[in-house]
Image (cartoon, rainbow, N blue to C red; front, side, top):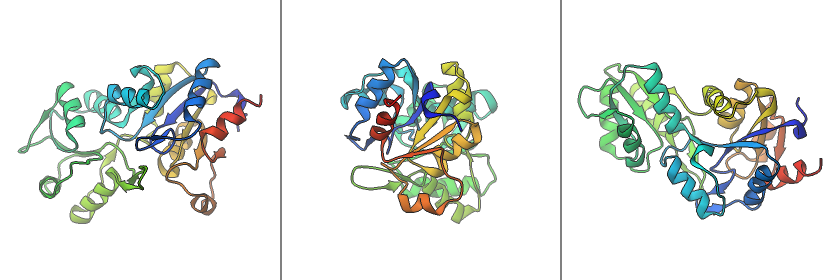
Length: 262
């Protein structure tokens, strides 16, 4: 295991790690300021595609964290890149919020109700029964099926709410189909980040609050895993698993404190 003071690059989950809803997690701003002042590289990762990089930049700015759009990589952005590079799916039926649909349209995809090339689902806060009904119809036709992320819930300041993974489970119950997930824990997200930052896995850590996405992706990509208990994962859940993260902190505030000891 790499010593924590040897890590030069931090990939940071946002929901549950840096903030909960519209409330910043105590110590998060100071942690980011420390990364800036110590010349450590960092990139914000999120499986939440309901905002694009510019919108996340504005949200972070409203919480007192000033970063550029280049510091942000979303599962929506990764999904767009996957579709552009790896498939011929031009016409998509989507279960997605308008913000992500606009991102897809801007990238050159056609959003259709009839005769799609593939079905794409995401965390959708505008979910309707009509969308589920249409998705079920096309999935039963055997069309290719893609999802931005497998998260079951999205942590908020008022408690967890259903995420893309929960929508996928509902559709699985009605169709028996499982999607190909593009976001965390797909190690391609980290591979993309390492190329952007020109970093090596042995000097990189993934920091997040979920065992089955953030920590699992770190395992798969061969980077250091750092779990924070400020979001979804509880200490009870952590104690039940055999394969533990490399490091565990109650929040990034304690991670920051540990890094300043060296």
